[in-house]
Length: 279
Image 1 (cartoon, rainbow, N blue to C red):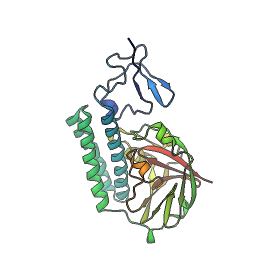
Image 2: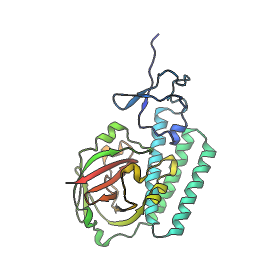
Image 3: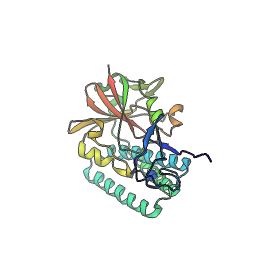
């Protein structure tokens, strides 16, 4: 009889809703080529293999990860809107914590329920963001400190739920973002700016804002040593980039960035974080 080997993604987040719906293994797994792992190891849980999708199908797992990443992105946009209103920002964080508890109590480990609840929460926050866009800079201008050409240099390892696998993430490396006064470009796609907002965000605040929906990232993971950095968000008309839509992302690389230094910015795509440098 042939023995089958079940493979699972290396970048699975053990604390994501998707991961918690899977069986638990008792031994670490070994990395194979192509960013995947072999789950047939001595000492591993034997029921359907250690990281089997006993509860989640591949489609359910991808859908849940995508909704987790989408929720985190729209939540960050809402946080940016309320940055100057501490009372409303505190209320948003309390509501998010309460919602996570209610969702988990209702859905348990059922992937379809988790994905639907997460989608509904993201839809709700997206409506709030649309109704209250942040105050733009005059004439839609992009801040001077971003102007120029930036090259995406590397992926930053974080404990986040992402809808990009390692192969997809690597396709961003070496591509270019260019900021002009009234627009920005990624590869061949140019997007007109309709305004931008700049906020100073501290390490504790950033970590707290990125701890929702079982996903976590902080300054230490991103290699940021400062206690606070500027976060610049560029507003723009809706745009669809075919190669990004296929991976579940509706954002444009570089539309929201952390300014780590004069020539270094950090941004995320679908909760995968990248570092870009200006030459």
